[in-house]
Image (cartoon, rainbow, N blue to C red; front, side):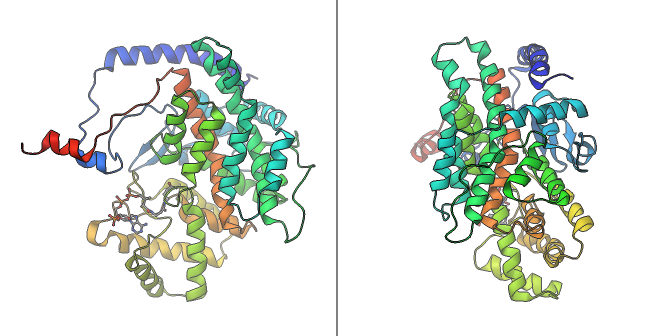
Length: 440
Ligand code: FCX
């Protein structure tokens, strides 16, 4: 079968010629007006980015290379073990636009396993982190450190031609994706070790007979096939959500200065660690667990509603609900909820997830302030992880981050393939707004 690099080398020239035609034909097309409110309002609705690998529709949710999630999941190849798609297949799709064959996905899996090594001093650095250092901080720290072996940074410094940049970028992206399970599993083992126990030390390594996700699960210390499948699903569906969200956009802007994939992705992880973005999956499980502690296992919908109203009244948000772009239930929530209903129907936390779905959208919709009252990707994921024994909520965003690497590095690599320039939108001061629009 084709390797990913071979296939990319065939696709890139054709795609670049398509893009040249698109720009010649439509380059002067108008993408909309920008108002002062949009500039103050988090740039909502301003179209200002090209992100080749995915597109978010407010009603239908994410499309990955034109495929909706429910249509794509059954089509992605399964590995030698398990019944859920291999995230490697998603990576192939995002980079090439083509659903890979099973052989191609397995080939990519083997290639990632071969590349999955981390310099020993970086392992030592992680072992020296205090257990109390947030796992996302440790992740960002380790990814930055891996920049030491960036092939792109070295090639750039040696003056390679611009049209070959993407080849080195590609190498770094695959190396980084391959290293992530090892890095993230080490962080997990260190933060969950018993009080007084030594850190992981030597001896954690990738098994070349396992897939990317299987390796990750095994190195974290999880052994069951069902956990492996749940992780495959999690890592496949959290990969990308078009280019303007905080993590993807951060990766894109940092990389536009030709910072290598390690530096760009570490910055992206710092954005994902914000509570309004990726950290919401941690917040979400904490919210559900606390609600259960207060209301018990047989709470009525009326009690759940009163609880939710009190939280909103105190000025807090309901984690797992709302979205900046989506205006319907997130399909990523739906597929996790369906998995949970099939595999853990009696989990008491799942019952609360269902009750929240019955109550929260109606409550949030009152008054019309919240633009999307429906659940997002984070509303169900914590319950799945918790069910299989992954109970350390402050680790959840690391799992999100490992998955996000597939999407943001694919989107960013395509930005380098297209030779997009350094990003530099114009900003204004408030005085300038008055000068432009106000009375003399
Ligand atoms: N609970 C309570 N209030 C909410 C709310 C929620 N879940 N979602 C939005 N609101 C409030 C906002 O706080 C804002 O209030 P303000 O005007 O007093 O500041 C108002 O409704 C309008 O916000 P809206 O335009 O609908 O939403 P934004 O685009 O500003 O923000 C997020 C979108 C996702 C940040 C917001 O809905 C939120 O805070 N949700 C809870 C946190 C969460 O689940 N984040 C994860 C999102 C995502 F899936 C991810 O990135 O991982």
